[in-house]
Length: 116
Length: 114
Image 1 (cartoon, rainbow over the protein chains, first blue to last red):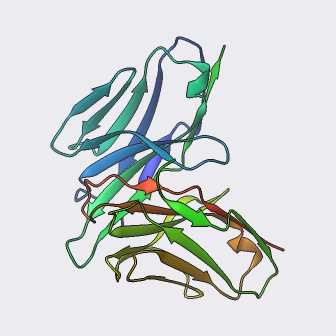
Image 2: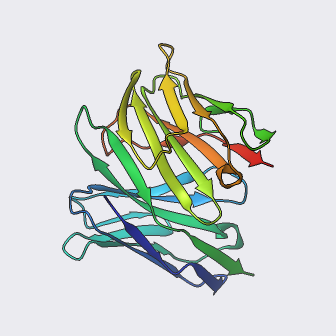
């Protein structure tokens, strides 16, 4: 099955700096890569996603890049703010077809701390 | 608020017992997913239902079962509970079941097995 590895597990930055989180996946059939932000005790919330036919996507201070050949994708947060502090999860999705459905395989998460 | 509701919010029970977790998807969403989040395992996919039928299956234990009803709400049944089953259980829903459909997560049910 799919395996997603995420690094680093913890990341501490100063407010205003950039943060980069990297993930690799194993199954070349994965074609959708969402990133979720989870605050303590809360539900995961989608912050950005990218499809396999796109190399890069940006939404204000957040960007995601995808390298299909190397099977890795990264989250970039610029001009970090204390409210960006949370756990970030990458995920990879495989759609097995109408009768096999789809699943998200998550990375282990990165605890991002933005120090004021 | 994602529009996905889960009950109960918290559940405390003893080993060997059986519990049922309930999920109501967003209005119009046909696909429901269940995930388990424990401290040492991260977010683990358990099972997916689409329009009442089981579709994808993850590492779901035989002691666990789920179903999706005609009104599209779903229930996750956990039986013969063990201490290691203590975790946050999330339900998510999406409009359809393809890869590109954003999954919206509910607030979760925190299960504590004593």
